[in-house]
Length: 276
Image 1 (cartoon, one colour):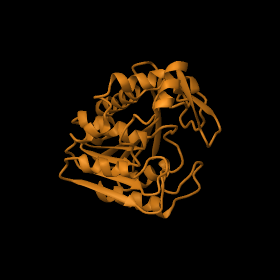
Image 2 (cartoon, helix red, strand yellow):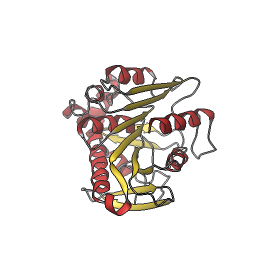
Image 3 (spheres, one colour):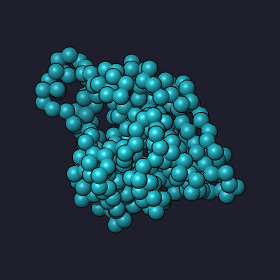
Image 4 (cartoon, one colour):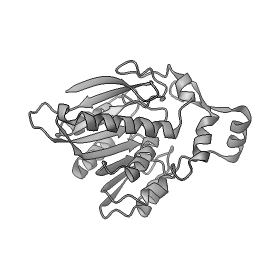
């Protein structure tokens, strides 16, 4: 079963949120919250299929669009970047605030929906993986962590780019799928500079002692698999698993719009189910 709700966060900006849950009477089922990445959204490509597959095994799955991801989140299932004004103002701290808002809501509504909030798993893809790591390091409500093609640092910009960014007040990144030029205001870089400790992903991972599953493709051209190895190496958890899949990349062979599953996506799903 799938249910969509739209909530306004503390900045009065909408979040479009999906609940996926099995059609069973059993209460207190485990819950998983999924965070998408940069230039992403909850309905991108394989994400609905992945979460459907996990939900069908008795997990209450929650996915949502970050408030400034660039889609129109007054709609249940937006898939186009029509709010580039909001995208330009996004920051990592804003995404952390959004995630906290979602978790607070889920905690407040646990009796209504019947999931076991005390079994909360947090998962994230790419930049959403980095957000999930930082949140898991500081929030004791999170009991397990899953990263998919996660970044190990938010500071990914070269010296010349930073100089131009500071001079112009913004940079533009090309969305190769939609051919849109997507502006990023200097406030994103400021956020990194002002919150270096708070936004240090490796430092956060060095504090995580809950069970962790790290998944990465060895042909990932967007985020090299060495970042997964760095995350795994620094994590002190007694239960940590690193799954590096050969011959697959950032989205495990899938595209948007979704054209069907792949061998590697099925391996990802199997690894997650086993971990949960």
